[in-house]
Amino acid sequence: MERDSKGLAVVIRSERVRENDRMLTLFSVPLGITKVISYGARKSIKCVRASLYTEGVFSLSRSRSALWSLKDIDVISTHGYLLEDLGKNMAAALFSDMVISGRDAGPELYSLYTGALDLLEFYDAESVVISFIAHYLRLAGLSGDYERCPVCQRIYGEDEVLGFSDAEGVAVCSECDTMSGSLILPPNARRFLARTLSLDIRESMDLRISPEQRHRIFRYMLRSLSLSFPGRLGSLEHGIWELDR
Ligand SMILES: [Zn+2]
Image 1 (tube, helix red, strand yellow):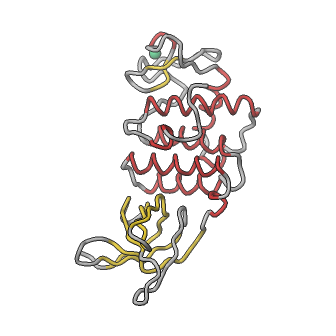
Image 2 (cartoon, rainbow, N blue to C red):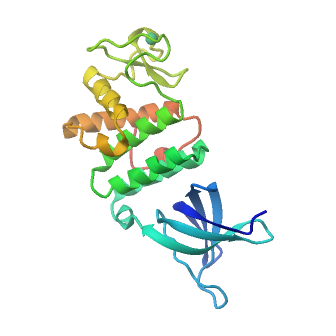
Image 3 (cartoon, rainbow, N blue to C red):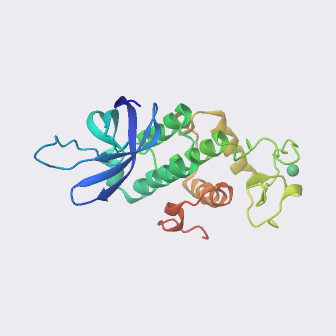
């Protein structure tokens, strides 16, 4: 068992334990999703500050209890702007929830997650959330590509309105719809999502869309996520985003 580890990581959750210590959940390329104790100010131990969403090269050591503890960080970004804006903060909390519940910790998801945190500095939260969810669901094999029906494999018509299969948790053609048209995706929104998936998350920020249309697609993505995602997402259940409007 290795006693030390050093690698690229980002703090995706931070919880207080005891008076001065924090339990960090790190998303790290070499270690995947891992819990790390960060000791607070004490005489004997050097205090390293690792606030939520800090990305950097983390140095960890493992004690006999097999728990990693934080030794040092070469900080790349603190993503400090995320803590100053409620919408951006919620978006980042949702992304963390999805990563922690999803249990995938591959390098592709790491770059999607940290890319999304970076984009939240410059773009509105709704655009970043739409693209993150679309890319995440495809990466996890939980959605179609919005080009053809994942159930019957038929290629969608240019002006086709999509339905949803709650059994499969995916957007489908109108014939495969199992929700009686209660979760539909209009043609222009479908084309927007197909284009989003043909680009990486950074490139997809340049797609043109009106704020009203963006908001409708944002609500659609949150609702479809709640039906597609296998685990519970606390940030959706208790967050500021009400799904039914
Ligand atoms: Zn179909």
